Image 1 (tube, protein in one colour):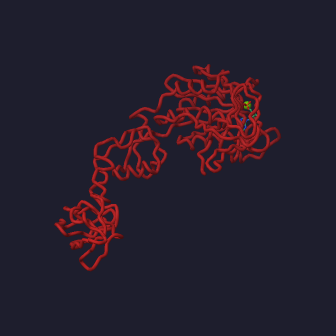
Image 2 (cartoon, protein in one colour; image 1 turned 45 degrees about the vertical axis):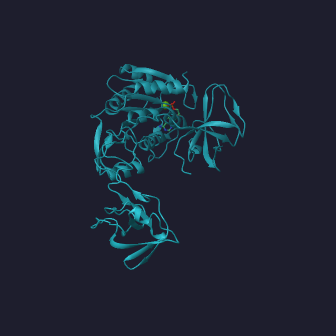
Image 3 (cartoon, helix red, strand yellow; image 1 turned 135 degrees about the vertical axis):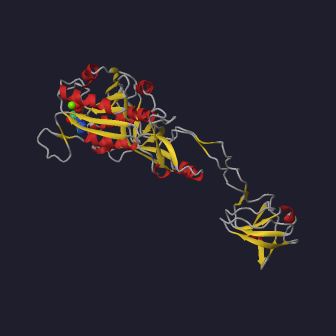
Length: 413
Ligand code: AMP
Ligand code: MG
């Protein structure tokens, strides 16, 4: 049995990211959120585009107001009013000023802004009662970004601030990696779809839905191949189709040592090379990882609903991230937290127990989900956001102690 970190490394080493330009597409800025930039961006424009005012006030020549104070105020003639969006028509000569508003272009001759709070206006005259710093409240052209410099690197996931930057650079269309295609199939004679009335012995194929949602949540495109019965011929045909269609295949069930567990054998028959058969984790010990020439990776995931999701979070997520073109941050996020309850493990495998991570006055706290921690109990997995990790060799962690926690969701608080 392979330790989790070694398994993760094997998986990452087996995968190549999507390639450029074959696996890219051009999209509109409006649909860019979460997409991975495939081409670095630089802009032809400086930012700010031109010298402009950071405040509402008066555009002045510093030397005119250098000596201004309550005792020796300076009065200037207002020659123009410049709201944001208009081009100044006049240059500022000695003893002159222009009324100016936030974001408006600085007029020629002016080099400093006096904020309106330090002034008193009387018709076309304004009196200034304190001396500003030279160049105060002027945002200089190109001071945030110079045209031609690198702006956004390829391999980053785009979020609101990046999209704002792209908009500013007038980059309406951009080249991103296509979404990875992930085929999902559920194996098992006992499985039925959620809209089928249950007969005795049957169970609903929840994995198809859980994995579909996991895949979409990671920016990839699920291909739903449905339920495949435990019949070698049918399973083989489905797996063959899945490998041909997808970048990654996820099948659940059929990877244990039971009489109906055919997946590994079929993968070998199809020419797959099996790199991992089990990992030293609980839940999720049976995990088959196979590669095929000129195609992506195959993950044979255990059927138990909790094991299936834990395997996805721990091992499939890094694979999807690397495949998708992301430059880094493929690994799951682990943080330190204080456990509120005692946590137990048999000690033989790295053990994951599910629960909720809350940040309480800045301190991460882990609360174990109530109810059974059986790998078949998906009920109390709902509304959790983290797995506490009990290392191999450790059988308990006392309440109040510090533990490593793997996030399964973004924290919302
Ligand atoms: P297996 O790995 O095929 O031996 O399945 C282990 C357990 O998980 C069995 O109790 C199955 O009924 C259950 N199971 C397998 N596949 C699914 C699925 N797609 N959805 C929900 N439970 C499943
Ligand atoms: Mg089965």
